[in-house]
Image (cartoon, rainbow, N blue to C red; front, side):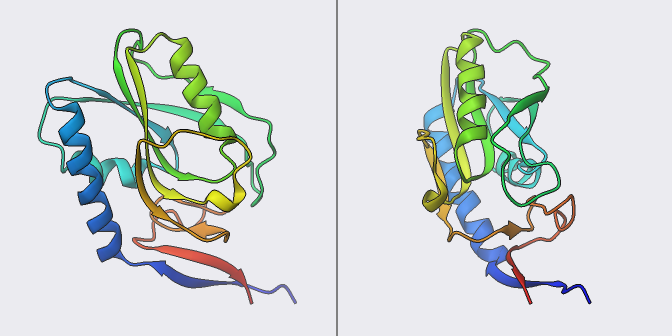
Length: 176
């Protein structure tokens, strides 16, 4: 018999909302009048991006980038490939990279390097969840939400083999 994973609530809707609101006030302070490009890393950051931009009351643009490093597993392969480039030119833009979670740092580091090579005017990183115990590559986090334990997390955009993204809270996925 195959065991079903158990979901243990880690971060409530209320805590997520308060964290997004705090981050939005920091972003607003730094980007007001700059018409930044918010570059969301798909698929995981879409919920965070949606909630964040609803709290930003100034001109901005949104674009997406897709990379792959996980496949269907729960561990990064370490082999990162660009799946979808942004459609907007990044040159001379103030780019704020939006990430759901930083784990090893490999994917985020890859994307930050990519954006810098496109000659952006500035590049900053905005992350909802930080898992520092797993870090293999140092990445500069300019706007940080919450530090999380070394567990596999799902919900609020985070997935396991494309499941659980739709959950409105963050859960630790544990084998029962």
